Length: 83
Image (cartoon, rainbow, N blue to C red; front, side, top):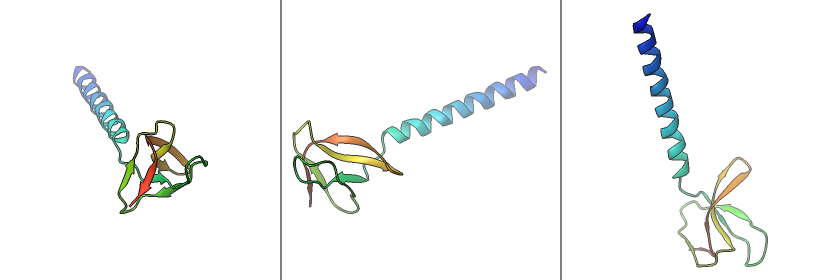
């Protein structure tokens, strides 16, 4: 019984550690969309692809984000400039 308890605790710790690693990795994911809308317009999220995106210092303008399905999580703010 003692051996079974140790194995269970080890497996639980391993699963918890793996889950935390996956969650931590999700928070550091690079953006995959940028806001292509003109200044002052609602966000128009477009794929970044091979473009280089720079964000100016405009804290009110959504610039880059991570899109998963139809949901976009804003990663950086500023004016988007596709190059």
